[in-house]
Length: 361
Image: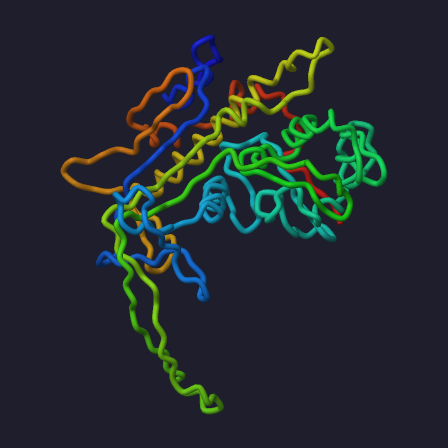
């Protein structure tokens, strides 16, 4: 880990993000680790798997094995010490997030709620957001911080960028995975951010395979169903690839710290950008580290990084002022902590006592 220079935006776990970088693409070739080569892709009973012809005509049928939305959930889950309560691993000590309690019992957390900190439920929770000791709801804290009027329906458009340093102090991972504030308390349109970290797993040159099945209701004397015959949609793929994209340009465009008196970026602008980039890299690296042996996405979808005599490591490609490619050293990145006295978390100037900040109901 190092401070940014004119030529380097970030060095983390031996990986260098050069100044002027706009996007980091990371790919890894995978293979099934279960018996046979049949794969159960993501899908719904009424839709089935997503298969479409390669527009370029080179890769036959392409199958979406794991969607962007599902991969976002998985890239959040790698950060959890306990996925059922959304608590973060020690490597994230000091990183803010929100936890909800009802009658002092755990309810949910911004790390596992579908809308993260922007949840309509969390908006109603109360906490002390400032040093004055007064409790207020999360919704009122947001409205006050952004100078909202008319009950959260309007605000100066020039204040919209101020939502990003606000989110940085509530749940920074929401800036990586995206958010949209739109609930009963805050109805102003425009407080949103797309994902900066996108990922998917796709198969190339795929074939559809229909697998039959039968279910017996043995011993259910009151049931008239008897037995059910069904079919399962599976695929085979000549090549499977995990793809990750970190939108460095998007994160760099955000106002992550309040402006100084001369309208220059605040002192924490650069450290906070570094932190978000490092978290994004850590998420990808840790997910790939799980794939090193085997990761079970579903009962019949167990994948691992491809093994053969000509082993190809996961690859990265940097797009921007300086374009580079090479092996992505995910093991070293996954082993790098973000939390210590000289860590990126401590340098980011984040509010203390918010890891987590508990909202009471």
